[in-house]
Amino acid sequence: MPAPRAPAFDPFDVPESNASAVPPPHDAPNRKRWYRRLGEHAGITRFGVNLVRIAPGGQSSFRHWHTEQDEFVWVLEGEVVLVTDAGEQVLKPGTCAGFPHATGDGHQFINRTAEDALILVVGDRTPGDAVGYPDDNLAASFVDGRFVFTRKDGSPL
Amino acid sequence: MPAPRAPAFDPFDVPESNASAVPPPHDAPNRKRWYRRLGEHAGITRFGVNLVRIAPGGQSSFRHWHTEQDEFVWVLEGEVVLVTDAGEQVLKPGTCAGFPHATGDGHQFINRTAEDALILVVGDRTPGDAVGYPDDNLAASFVDGRFVFTRKDGSPL
Image (cartoon, rainbow over all chains, first blue to last red; front, side, top):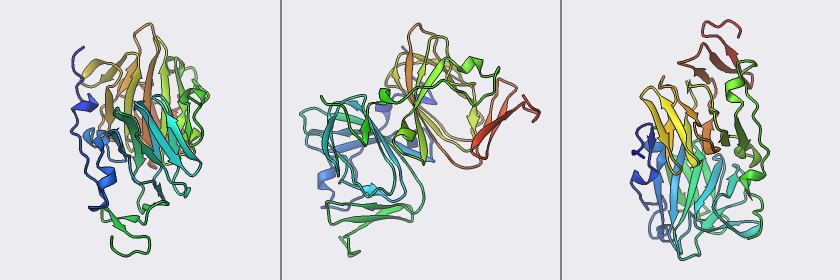
């Protein structure tokens, strides 16, 4: 079959990054997850779609919830552990999960297997978003186009 | 593996519908596609996520583009033909496509195989959306929470 052409594409043709908005050295736990910005590649601006590869021992992010952003995740490959206030559960490919904004219940995906895990992550870009981190002394607000991180009391990291 | 529990879920546990906002009898070509409202099931409001099953001979929708809504599609199972101004192409599982708003280039997925095709479709809910249909004498605007369909000249269908 010929390679897809625009507006279709092979998601693995999009460059991968493990950059983090969390300033070093606090970003270290997040550097084993790599993402491809599929929505941005397609010219989409109203929401983000990321193909996220969590390497063995990695996590998608710190456990967190958003004040404004809804998130949706579809597990594509491998096995991930979803952590929420209700505890842990293992999710297999073909399972999905939704995280409405402002619940106060943080979520996080961890890869405890020896193989990569792939998840498709969608999130909107509603203005005024902020992020709560129930398990870490961390807070974030979206200001001037980027997330600014502080400790919970607002002091610098 | 135990069944997923909230906020995770098995997408196939969500009820399926082939309802169409297009009034009958104009809806007939769209009734061979069935969708599960995964985002709504998860309590998400900022964007929609639908698991769409296109039965053999079915189409996702009339070929269309949105003035405000961005759309993103991931092909999960089967083979679909994507139709745009550039022509037709067959997409296999693991391929994706993005449709930014206001391009004027309509898109549509058709299933010409003998097996069901499954695609995951994401779209935002930016207010003031309207829909253009390059191949059909059809127009739609989102008014009071629902799409209202007319002919291109604004007369009733």
